[in-house]
Length: 145
Image 1 (tube, rainbow, N blue to C red):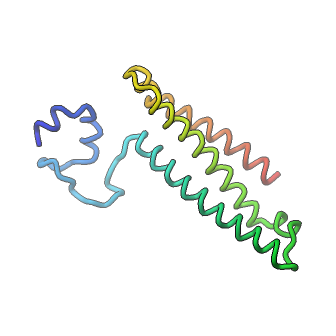
Image 2: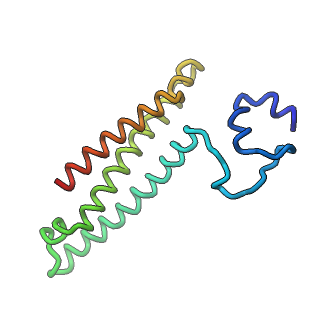
């Protein structure tokens, strides 16, 4: 196991996850692990994909209610605050999912080490988060005001 640690280019990240001298995790609770920023962004990409599927199902349920229940109209549904929360969550999740998906595609396309390191750098990760934050503010303003 010591040989693995010497050859591992991500030795710093490995130290975060394993604090036991025998290179075993002390605890298997997920809150005890300190994941690198790229791992957190990748996990958030998957979570927003799940949020998009759930919101699509809710949108289909709303469309079904509007079509088959005469008491529910499009005007009533669009004026409801729950629908506005759904719109806000959908567009925020879609924006993040699209931005991080674009980053994943660029990382897969550029196979040279220099360009791959640039795409996976902290600067690009923070640029993604900054762009998403500005887009989130714009989405909140557009949906609610």
